[in-house]
Amino acid sequence: MEVFSSSNSPFSIVNYRLVGGGVIHLECPKNRRGLGVPDMIILHYTAGTSAESSAKFLARPDVKASAHMVIGRDGQVIQLVPFNIEAWHAGKSSYRGRNELNHYSIGI
Image (cartoon, rainbow, N blue to C red; front, side, top):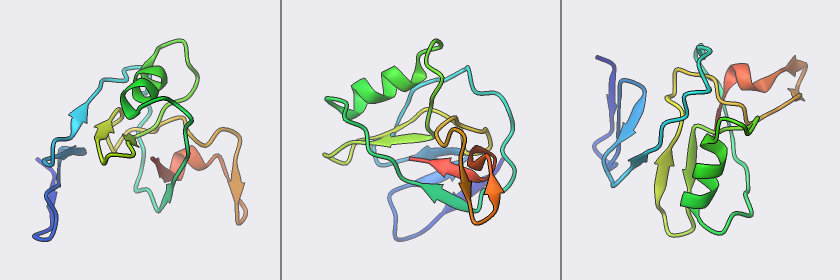
Protein backbone atom coordinates (compact mmCIF):
# COMPACT_ATOMS: atom_id res chain seq x y z
CA MET A 1 0.00 0.00 0.00
CA GLU A 2 1.34 3.41 -1.04
CA VAL A 3 0.75 6.12 1.62
CA PHE A 4 1.71 9.79 1.76
CA SER A 5 0.70 12.04 4.61
CA SER A 6 1.68 15.41 6.05
CA SER A 7 0.96 16.38 9.63
CA ASN A 8 -0.10 19.86 8.44
CA SER A 9 -2.87 18.63 6.12
CA PRO A 10 -6.26 16.96 6.57
CA PHE A 11 -5.45 14.98 3.39
CA SER A 12 -3.40 11.86 2.76
CA ILE A 13 -2.69 9.91 -0.41
CA VAL A 14 -3.44 6.20 -0.07
CA ASN A 15 -3.01 3.93 -3.09
CA TYR A 16 -2.80 6.98 -5.38
CA ARG A 17 -6.09 8.39 -4.10
CA LEU A 18 -6.56 11.51 -2.02
CA VAL A 19 -8.39 10.74 1.24
CA GLY A 20 -9.60 12.80 4.18
CA GLY A 21 -11.04 16.29 4.28
CA GLY A 22 -14.31 15.14 2.70
CA VAL A 23 -12.80 14.15 -0.66
CA ILE A 24 -15.38 12.64 -3.03
CA HIS A 25 -14.27 9.94 -5.47
CA LEU A 26 -15.98 9.80 -8.83
CA GLU A 27 -14.93 6.92 -11.07
CA CYS A 28 -13.58 7.75 -14.52
CA PRO A 29 -12.94 4.29 -16.04
CA LYS A 30 -12.07 5.63 -19.51
CA ASN A 31 -8.59 6.48 -18.21
CA ARG A 32 -6.38 3.39 -18.02
CA ARG A 33 -2.87 4.31 -19.17
CA GLY A 34 -0.32 4.42 -16.37
CA LEU A 35 1.34 7.67 -15.38
CA GLY A 36 5.01 7.54 -14.40
CA VAL A 37 6.30 9.97 -11.83
CA PRO A 38 4.60 13.28 -12.64
CA ASP A 39 6.77 16.36 -12.32
CA MET A 40 4.26 19.10 -13.02
CA ILE A 41 0.78 20.17 -12.02
CA ILE A 42 -1.45 21.86 -14.58
CA LEU A 43 -4.25 24.00 -13.16
CA HIS A 44 -7.28 24.62 -15.34
CA TYR A 45 -10.40 26.73 -15.05
CA THR A 46 -13.82 25.34 -15.85
CA ALA A 47 -16.95 27.39 -16.37
CA GLY A 48 -19.21 24.67 -15.00
CA THR A 49 -21.97 25.66 -12.62
CA SER A 50 -20.42 23.60 -9.79
CA ALA A 51 -17.52 21.28 -9.03
CA GLU A 52 -19.93 18.36 -9.13
CA SER A 53 -21.35 19.23 -12.56
CA SER A 54 -17.84 19.77 -13.98
CA ALA A 55 -16.58 16.48 -12.53
CA LYS A 56 -19.58 14.53 -13.82
CA PHE A 57 -19.07 16.03 -17.29
CA LEU A 58 -15.36 15.11 -17.33
CA ALA A 59 -16.14 11.56 -16.17
CA ARG A 60 -18.58 10.88 -19.01
CA PRO A 61 -17.33 8.13 -21.36
CA ASP A 62 -18.16 10.18 -24.48
CA VAL A 63 -16.09 13.21 -23.39
CA LYS A 64 -12.48 13.16 -24.60
CA ALA A 65 -11.20 15.08 -21.57
CA SER A 66 -10.71 14.28 -17.90
CA ALA A 67 -8.77 15.50 -14.86
CA HIS A 68 -7.26 14.00 -11.76
CA MET A 69 -9.21 16.36 -9.53
CA VAL A 70 -11.81 19.09 -9.59
CA ILE A 71 -11.79 21.64 -6.77
CA GLY A 72 -14.86 23.79 -6.25
CA ARG A 73 -15.02 27.42 -5.26
CA ASP A 74 -16.20 26.30 -1.82
CA GLY A 75 -13.19 23.95 -1.40
CA GLN A 76 -15.04 20.76 -2.33
CA VAL A 77 -12.54 18.23 -3.73
CA ILE A 78 -13.55 15.54 -6.21
CA GLN A 79 -11.00 13.03 -7.51
CA LEU A 80 -11.77 11.36 -10.83
CA VAL A 81 -8.48 9.71 -11.80
CA PRO A 82 -5.91 8.14 -9.44
CA PHE A 83 -2.51 9.84 -9.40
CA ASN A 84 -0.83 6.83 -11.05
CA ILE A 85 -3.14 6.96 -14.12
CA GLU A 86 -2.88 9.47 -16.97
CA ALA A 87 -5.75 11.96 -17.25
CA TRP A 88 -6.67 13.71 -20.51
CA HIS A 89 -6.42 17.36 -19.53
CA ALA A 90 -3.51 18.80 -21.52
CA GLY A 91 -4.43 17.75 -25.07
CA LYS A 92 -1.82 18.39 -27.77
CA SER A 93 0.52 20.31 -25.54
CA SER A 94 4.15 21.29 -25.19
CA TYR A 95 6.26 23.11 -22.66
CA ARG A 96 10.01 23.70 -22.72
CA GLY A 97 10.58 21.14 -25.44
CA ARG A 98 8.35 18.44 -23.96
CA ASN A 99 5.23 17.30 -25.79
CA GLU A 100 2.08 15.49 -24.68
CA LEU A 101 2.07 16.84 -21.14
CA ASN A 102 -0.63 14.38 -20.06
CA HIS A 103 2.27 11.89 -19.74
CA TYR A 104 4.04 13.99 -17.08
CA SER A 105 1.43 15.91 -15.16
CA ILE A 106 -1.42 15.99 -12.68
CA GLY A 107 -4.47 17.88 -13.98
CA ILE A 108 -6.58 19.91 -11.58
